[in-house]
Every structure is written in structure tokens, then in C-alpha cells.
Image (cartoon, rainbow, N blue to C red):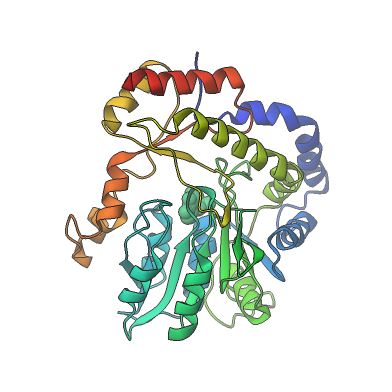
Length: 371
Ligand SMILES: Cc1ncc(COP(=O)(O)O)c(C=O)c1O
């Protein structure tokens, strides 16, 4: 059986009658730039995320770049982050003029280790970018006091975690709700995916929201008048229309992912080799990825390929060891939990439309390899 890692065609077929009229409505009005759907999507995502403000932009990468630019980083200013994430997290720090400082992860959840963050703070530290990786939130209750104590911005890279929640001091808190700013990606493979690139910044801070709105529109609040040099990072109205139509399904899709994840975990729990991902009991995980740790990972990957089972390695080379960051001087072995994860992880199909038969084929292929 052929099981893709992600089946966007199946999803499109299931919502075609909702998405196509939404797209056509924008085309009929020819309102492509900052049309009404952009503001509607901002309001809907702010409501979902429990934030007062949402500012849509062109991608999840720009959603990181703009708030980092707002920090006005000077050469040598440091921003602490995880090396076990998609490249954009650290690339945005660099492109905003800062120096990424990588600290190790918690081996169980793959998320940044707050003790390592605390230990890395220096007089040059300006911010922390915590990533809510694979769909579960980093420990905000530990990160917020560190940021507060040292006067640092805390950016939540929630690209993979829209709608995820965590119990913080007894109350459910949404991804992006508690930090200085939360950043979202609507890259097509995300739980809420556009039909192209799209992103959003969410915040409680009105002044920051205003600054981000200016930065996404060439740094001006009035057309042709520029307070600072910004970017062209608007969200396309067509993408906003697609996302608005899809947003109505996000909760059911994330619940389906969680059900698939539970079925995988039941099948793999107790296996001597296959280690299912751990959900921190404080988290409600939305499973943008279902990521195993296994021995002989590359051989398993070749086996799955032979069986036509989609899979991917997120992420094969920890960011502190990427050639573009060689000048930062991190040695191999310096962040062992992240490096070990890179050698052991493999992500399996967990998309909402995955059928039971498809999932059984994945389980059989994985268990078959280690039998
Ligand atoms: C953790 C993380 N940060 C940032 C990004 C960047 O988002 P985008 O691809 O929308 O620019 C992504 C996604 O691709 C991501 O997974």
C-alpha cells in the first residue's frame, strides 16, 4: 500500500466546495491586496489564540523576522534558541542582525531546555526564541520568568503549533498567548495550511502590534510616509480566504491527528527499539508531526521507502552544526541531546485523512523492520 507522508489532495477534495467559492469571491472582487479576508482571518486567529492582536504576513519566516527586527538588534546582540528546529528560526535571528546562541533540548519532548537557556544568558542577550516543536508547547512557565528576570523578549515560534495548549499555573494557555509575540506559519504542510506561503504574528501588546503592522508595509502607517524601513510582507488576500475556509476544520483535523498519534503510540509502546514521542502531561499536543526515535534509523527509512511508506527526517543536522553557522564555533558533541535526536528521529504519516488501513500498513512496516 502506498501511504504518503501528507495527502493534501485528499484534504482538498473534502473541502473543495467551501474553498473554491471563497477563492472565487476574492477574484470576483479583484481585491488581492489587504482585502477584507485578511482582517477577518486576523480576528479569527487572535480569538483562537487568546491574543488581543494578530498581524498577518507573508510567511512563518517573516513572522519571526519582523518582531526580531523590532528588537533593533546591534552587532553582537544575542538571541537564545534551540538548534533542533526548522532553519528559519535561527535564520531569522541572523537576518535581523543578531547572533543565534544555541542551547540544548529536553530529550523527551525535543523542546528547548529552560535550564540551558538560563545558563546561556549574558549581558548581550536580548531575546529568546522558543519553538513549540512538532505540535507541543515548550515549558512557558519556566521560560517566562527567565525572560522577565533578564528583561528579554520571548518569541514563541508556534509555526507547528497553532491551537496547541499548555496548562500553565492551572490554566490552559494557547500557543502564542503568553510570550512577547507568537509566530505562526501557514505553510501548506502545517495543521492549518494555505495554498502557498502565509504567516501571522500574534501578541497582547498593542504598541508592538502597531509596529509589526508598519514593518509589514514598508515601515509606514500612512501610504508613502515611512517612519522606518520595513518590508513588503503582506498576506495575500487569496491565501486569507483559503485559510478562513479551512480554519473551521482546524479543531477536527488536529483531533484526528491526535487520534492517529494515540493509535501509533499504543502500537509502539513497550517495543524494545521503537520509542514513541512523549507528550508532556501539561500539553495538549496537535501532532503536526509524529516523530519516533529508533536505532538504525537510516536503514528503517530505506525499508519504509521500499514499502512506499512516506516519512521524513525532521531534522537531520542540528542548526549549530550547519555550515552557515560554522563561524559561531560550535563543536560536534557540544549540544548532545539535539545531535542524538538528529541521528534517531523519523516522522511518520499523521495527516487527518490517514485511513486505518493506511496507518496499519505504516505500523506493520515499522514493526516488521525490527522483527
Ligand atoms: C519551527 C518553524 N519555524 C519557522 C518556520 C517558517 O515558516 P514558513 O515556511 O511559513 O516561512 C517553519 C515552517 O516551515 C517551522 O516549522
